[in-house]
Amino acid sequence: MGLLNKKKKVSRSKSIIFEKPGNDYVKEAYTRLKDNVLYLAIDGKNKVLQVESSVSGEAKTSTLANLGVCLSLSGKKVCLIDLDFRKPRLHRAFHLDNVDGIAEYMLDSIDLEHLIKKTSFENCDVINRGSDISNSSVVLSSNKLQELFNLLREKYDFILVDCPPVLLVSDFIHISRLTDGVIFVCAFGMTKKSQVREAIKQLKQNNIPILGSVYSFYDPKKTNYAYEYLNYGYYGYNDKSKR
Amino acid sequence: MEENRNVDESGISLSDIFFLIKKNIIMILLITGLFTLCGGVYGLCFKSVNYKTSSTAIVMSESSSSNSNYQDYLFSNYLVNSFKTFIVSDPVLSKVSEKTGVPKANLAKMVSVNSETNSLILKITVESTLGDEKTIEIANEILDTAIEVANTKQEDGEYKYTVLANNLVDMEYAFETSASRGAAMVILVAMMIGLIISFVIIFIKYSLDDTVNSRDFMEKECGITVLAAISEIKEE
Figure 1 (tube, rainbow over the protein chains, first blue to last red):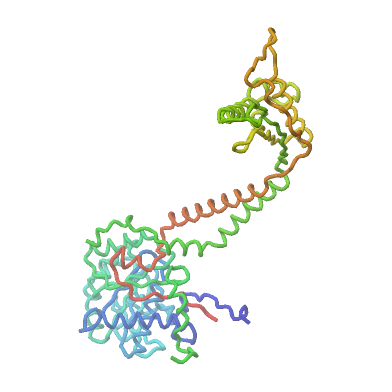
Figure 2 (tube, chains in turn brown, yellow; figure 1 turned 30 degrees about the horizontal axis):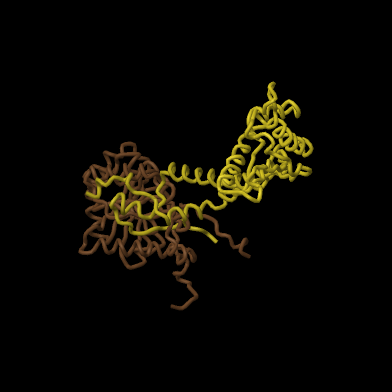
């Protein structure tokens, strides 16, 4: 039964863990992340967060999507925006089509109502990229996008922005003028330290506040934190041992 | 100030070392096992058998008489030590080499002479890989040749080695050998080499691993608070 019951890794595009039962320890980790983000947003600060990473493949989008859902489940109104114009992935996490997005909005083809997509989670909305955008820096530095963000700030408690990796393109500089700070995602055991240091250096050089970091693909068995490994499976929503 | 911290100063703690060993235990066991196996195969199947035998001689001096005094005691000790050197000296080994056909340089490595403290008995030990009969032959030839050379007379009839002449007598000739391959030592050495190599590999792996593999990295080296550590999602 142990072999039949073996867990397999899930494609990140299908990775809204709150859609189905299981993975309690991951849900608990997102709950902790959500609590920390709520703490950062005390007094109304830091409500527009830019989720960054050094390179691609660090689970930035799935971290952002799950954080957004977790915030919405706690009663907050959340809007997730995909500003990774080269590799938009956010719509896939919520099983949406990548149509009628920012590209169309910037061309005045659609209005705000059609731009914002509802998801299966109440209070969690998504704005996707839409069709290809050839000149991302023009769009990101435009006044229209700034106005969009101003509107969204009034409407939502949190705005989470999915961005391209820091070391690949310089879009993060333009995006930073729209946001309050960065949450830096780092793939544990995969990203090189030199890459992380360089990405953080670039963020700091541009005076972009880094509010905190998140380890993705974290495996306590690969660390020296024995207490963490021993207690990792203890907490769960279906924990049978009564505390 | 923390931003200017020299990252190279961060070292590895004892717990990190034990953790690395635990993490790579299978590799350590495999490499050590492989080397031990190779050592065992070599030691038990390919290594030459080492034969060992010994003959004994007794140093006859006036100190062996019942009226011995302290000077006799000193003299007998002097004789014992002299014979120890004499038996493995060039005149003796050259003759033994001629008789046995074993090169002198090899003989010098094979032969050792010992005696216990305050004892007049010399033990001539021979260790070789030439077979048990040859080893016995060498041990006995050395004994006979040492006595013969010690008693060599010159043309004028005087003993060439006056001090040594007639003072060495054969006591027991070698008649059997003990054989061993020394496999245990080979296996032990192979095991140690395997362990060392596996630790070297771990060290190289650890040194070359530039990935973020410590939870402290973001907070201590980059100065950024860790908000959460999220594992990979698995589907049942």
